[in-house]
Length: 500
Image (tube, rainbow, N blue to C red; front, side, top):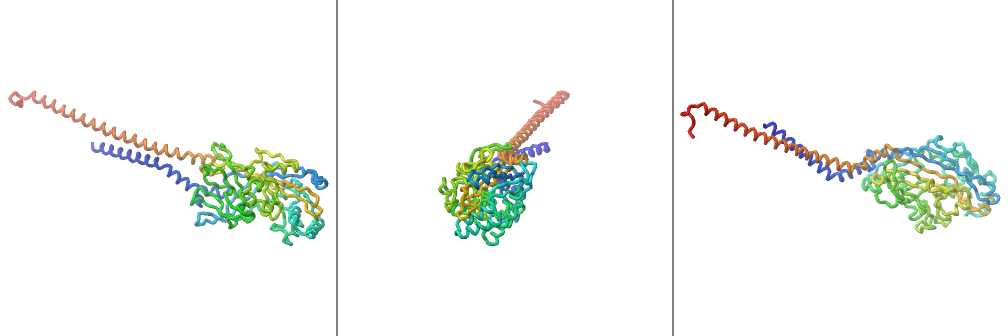
């Protein structure tokens, strides 16, 4: 009997413990979940997010589209509208490493980016040996730099270019234009005369960049340890909190690098700092979209993203010399070693129509040329990235330089590129688990509490049942004793029977 009583007590205690544990954990589960999310997302050398940050975790591709100029002779001779034919894409698989990391006590990490590209011919629409004819960037840059010099210097520069056989246009292979580079005597002379800040003796748009850990500069970024909603925000670039290439608010460094984001629950805009153009771009909320079974917030580049002060007064600092065209291109010449470089959306999408009217061959399309990023708002994980810009060089008449003197001012499209990445099914599954944890945890915890209550009922039932059995046993035993006594009395002599 004593052993049975102990068992009941143990069952009841066990039921109480499970019930209290389930109720307590279920009640505090939101706090437990938020603490877990904080530990998972905050960037540290041992956090889950670190492995996704230090090296590109999902397939990423950089696609180049080159513009081939089909009628340069007609343009130079009689100002016929230049015509361009898009070639490509030339697809490179990209791996982005974060190197030379220094973890600081103020909740930031200082690092450099090492990008490595591998050509994927099977995904490309052409070969790296394809020949491209377009504006000579060296000649265009020299003319642009000399445009405000004295007449004597401009004439001298013109004579030097003619002597060296420089032309307004050139034809090179895709590989030479992108990565390998090509030798140019004018560039070497310009370097010796300190007439250019370009640090190389060969020219290519991505020359000396593949595999370099210093080209992109040094970043200082918030880790989210002090405030999770600041995770990934670039605090400094090249040890400065402002970009010296732009004045005023246009030089402000803000936003993320694009690969690590904080939770974005109700953000109407997001910012990305792009070192290639030495400034930040603002994207606006478009809608909610679904990918890999996840719902994310889509942010896009609108017609204000590359405005140069024509439509948005606060962006006048992007055109300090008043030497900018209509809205839709951003002057990045200071950022690009003094070259007459302007960025736009591909095919001048969302730019003023005058850019397209001056040339032929442009076919802007929202579906193909829109810059967009889809972010899962709770975790800040990018689901779809389509970051794309077009590089243009300004070709304009320069007095006293016969090669350029009679040209029409034209923005010449050189190439456009898109950086694309999509969240894989495996990573999407991991994100789904994180997202269902709040409801799953609460249901599980209160389910445990329910099991504890059930165990309590079972213990109480066993206790009551045992009690009933003991009472029944006592009644039966008492009855049996009375029957035995009655039978014994029947066999006794009358005189020995107890008197009533």
